[in-house]
Image 1 (cartoon, one colour):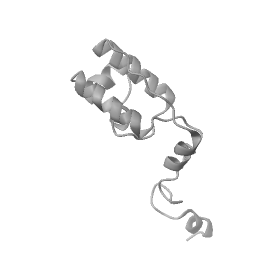
Image 2 (cartoon, helix red, strand yellow; image 1 turned 180 degrees about the vertical axis):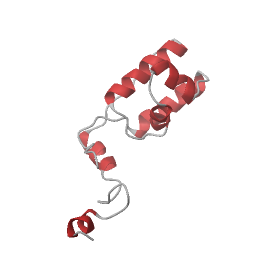
Image 3 (cartoon, helix red, strand yellow; image 1 turned 60 degrees about the vertical axis):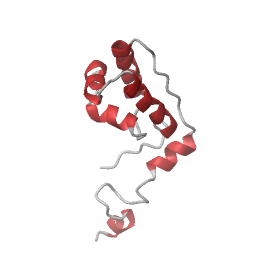
Image 4 (spheres, one colour; image 1 turned 30 degrees about the vertical axis):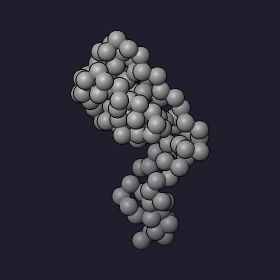
Length: 107
């Protein structure tokens, strides 16, 4: 089952670069941040690599890093066009790589 993430807020790549610099500056690991934030490590990894992360999870991570480092990390939300562009990264294919049109034909 595919989820429609086109309306989801996300961190843009620029914020990922800032986030990575924040982690390095404060010598924080993904595991430490995930534990303090009560989110999966994959969420922190995704933020560090500029991948889609939900608003709620990003807010939890920001609170977690503040607990660990004592300094607030601010993130910003990209325009909807960037979110849609990232949501369509798979060029119309499902998560298993099968074309959606092919699925409709029953092949």
